[in-house]
Length: 198
Image 1 (cartoon, rainbow, N blue to C red):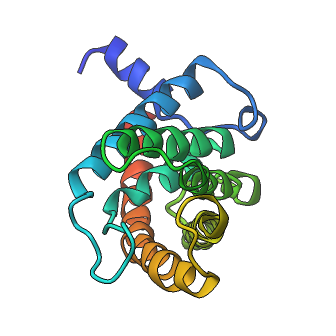
Image 2 (tube, rainbow, N blue to C red):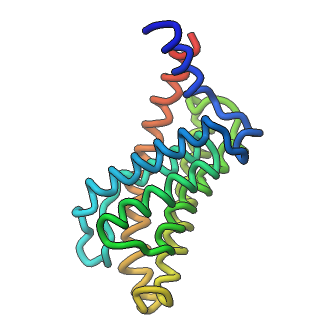
Image 3 (tube, rainbow, N blue to C red):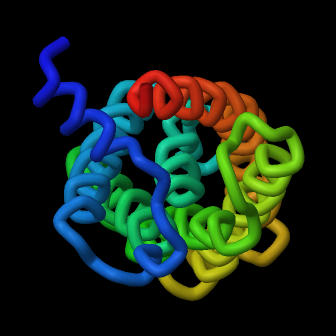
């Protein structure tokens, strides 16, 4: 690897500083574009993996993308990744449902508060646990907002139906896949940062 390539790679994967979390920079825009594109592609790949008995809810390992980008780069990047990535994939499949696009954005936004709470790399278990807890809260809250508002916006279903056919299966699937994958990706990211800084 050339010195120039190593320098640009190290710059791209350096730790996000707290003062950068709420500021748009060229670097954060790059992360937003990469995250949204990855999330859209992974959603498109798994959209046919529909959970039986659920209402248009698929198994989505890609749910790790908005929380991962949120944990690393903050709430703005996390929200954009979830909101735009899901909007793109929904536009190409079911059609756009704004409450679900916002709910997916909230997943990344809430996970994005992790850098405000933790210090240092994600090789330390307390930091990883904090990231996992905030990401789980993001999944639960974001998808609750989406399912709960379906009662009035699109599906015209009851609260019980919204919870049992939308929120429970969607949040359960995203937690089941998203949180373990987040831990794996954070470990890989930490190793990549260490190698790039040598």
